[in-house]
Every structure is written in structure tokens, then in C-alpha cells.
Amino acid sequence: ADIAYYQNDNPYLTDAEYDSLKKRNEEIEARFPELIREDSPSKKIGAPLKSGFGKIPHRFPMLSLGDVFSLEEVDDFVLSVKRFLNTADSIDFMAEPKIDGLSFSARYENGRFVQGAPRGDGTTGEDITANLRTIRLLPQELPADAPRILEVRGEVYMAKADFFALNQKYEAEGKKTFANPRNAAAGSLRQLDPKIAAQRQLDIAVFNLQLAQGRSFTTHTETLDYLRSQHFKVIPYCLLRTHADIMAEIDRLNDTRMERPFDMDGAVVKLNDLADRETLGSTAKFPRWAIAYKYPPERKTSRILDIVVQVGRTGVLTPKAQLEPVRLAGTTVTFATLHNQDYITQKDIRIGDTVVVQKAGEIIPEIVEVAPEHRPAGAVPYYLP
Ligand code: IVH
Image (tube, rainbow, N blue to C red; front, side):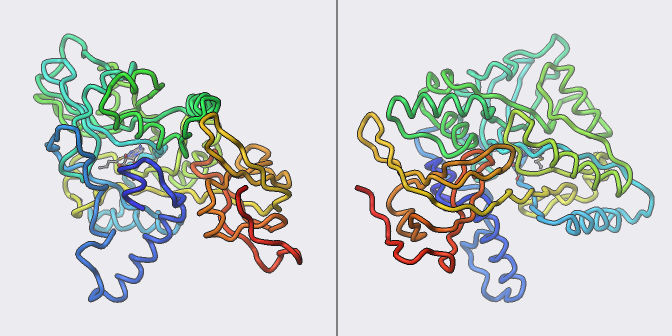
């Protein structure tokens, strides 16, 4: 699944399926530590690098975030931070949208953008400088008083509207479409020819100042304000004092996530004070001062009325399930992608089946599971013509 996702930009598990398998593996490992394998997904950050690119060692390890899936776990996080800092006082947290894109770091020397890389395996990333240069919103030059070295970290993404337009164009041309905006963004950045990235509408938001030589800051908010003054497009954030504030902001981010131009797969809760962050430090994979709360994808039950097959210009056959219309994540869904015969066979999807649908990456509806107990008599396995 990692190879399909990270290297081929063509996942076959939904993010939710992937997360739940990963979580189950972690639960098993917590109960039976003697079973932990060297190649366990719990020990890995990202994936092996794609060949063909130069390599850039990260000056600061590009850590990932620990995921949680319930508000109780967010609670535990807040409490554990307070315990660690040995304080009962209220401390400032912040919440930001978690953009579902591709993490990158960018280095500026004497005010010029010189180098950029995605997370890669956490310690080294591919040299995608040429592709990052094609992104209009990433400043190529900083204002006159820029530090000698400045490094930022952020997310490259494709806006939902641009992703739709790109897929529509590809579909009309009979080309293979992208599964979701994240894959479209990753696929664009991991092309050796920067002309391809230049043709795609990519966007960025920065969320961390890694280094600004000669300057010091005391809070995360200050660093974000500074980055804005340096003409970076900065992630929207909200400063939170109390426990109730944090919970309310997570809810608010969830309620408004469909209206945002980008795919958002959760909320990131971070500690604001930079000295406190130092005190907390990080594990091999995650900082202890931040956490990602992942929203569950919305799911609904529907029924397959028919399976229709689309023929692309090059003759590629794409099966789609025609569904009984159902409201899902802000739109009325009447079709779900069935990808290909393997997918249909693996899930044993038949006309007449009652199915659970969700939007993968919140956009393309897909079938999560089939309820064989509701299968009408006489339903037969489906084969593409
Ligand atoms: S903070 C050291 N803030 O989520 C902590 N990450 O699952 C750096 N992401 O690799 C991460 N939006 O690519 C942070 N507002 C945000 C984010 C964000 C998206 C991505 C980032 C990270 C991944 C972890």
C-alpha cells in the first residue's frame, strides 16, 4: 500500500482503510511487543525515495504527526503535554486545518529560493526544486531584509476545483485520471520534467518556520506572522486557551471543511510556545507537541441500480456503479467508481447489492463494503464485457 501511495501515486486503499489497518497493527504491537518486526509500518516514516531525482538530506528531520481518531485522545494529548511541562496553568494551543497534500521544505539563501524537497523517508527527500519553482505562490525571492538562511515547511496541494478540471480533461482525452487531489499534487511534483508541474495548478500553505538565521521567536504564532511578512502563504490558524476552546475549534474546522478549496483530512493541534516545544521534544517519528485529529470520512448506505462501463479514448474500460441517489459530504451521489475488474472481483460487487459508500479524499465516491445479507436472489458476479 505504501508503494502504491508514495511511489506510484496510485493508492488502492482509501485513507481510512489504511489508517485503520495501521492502527490495528499498533494495537497488536502494544499488546505483543515481542511480535514487532523491523519492517513494521509503525517504524517507518514515508517511503523509499523515487529514483531519477537528486537527493537532499534534510537539515531538520521532517517528522510526521501522531494521528488520533477520537476527541478523548485529543484530551489525553492536552493532558499529557501539561503533565510533561508540569503545569496546571492554561497553556496556549493552536489548531490548524490539516491539508491533505504533500509535505515539502524549502530553503532560501540570501533571500533566494535555492532548494526544495518533499519529506521522502524523513531524513532525505528527492530534489524537486525545479518543480517547486513552477508554483506561483511559492516566493522565489524574499524582501530585502531576509535572513541569510531561511527554511520553511509546508504543504503543496491541488485545490479541489483544479483537480476536478484536470480529471475532466484527462477523462476526455482518454488518459488515466487521479484518485484524489493529493495524488494529483504528488504526481505532478514527482515528474522529472518540470514542464508538467508548470501546467498543473499547484498551491501551497506553509505551517512551520524551520530556521531563520539570526532571528529568534518565542511562539509559533510569531513565526507564522513573520512568514506572512516574508510573502509566504500561511496556513490559517486559531489560538486556543482552554480545553473547551480546543474542542470547539476542532468541531468548527470539521463543520467548515467541505467549503474549503482544499481537501482537509483533519485538524492539527499544536503547542504555541517554542521553548515548551523544545522541552517536550519528539520521538523518532513524531513531535510530542502536536497531534493530528483525523476526521472520519462520511459514509452512507445505497444500492447499486446498474453497472455502466465507460470507454476512454484509448479504449480503457472504466466501470462505474449507478447508485440510488444519496446525500454524501455535501453532494448528491449517483455514481461510484469501481476502478477495474480486480476491484469488482475482490469486493464481489454485484448489480442489486446494498453497499456502503464514502468519498475517497472526500471527492470521488467509492464503495467501502457490500452487504451480502441484503443481496437480492439471482444476483450474479459481475464481469466486464
Ligand atoms: S505540522 C513537525 N501542520 O500532515 C510537525 N502538518 O500527518 C510538522 N500537514 O507531514 C507537521 N497540514 O505534511 C502540520 N497544518 C499542518 C498541516 C500538516 C498538513 C501534513 C504534513 C505532515 C502530515 C502529518
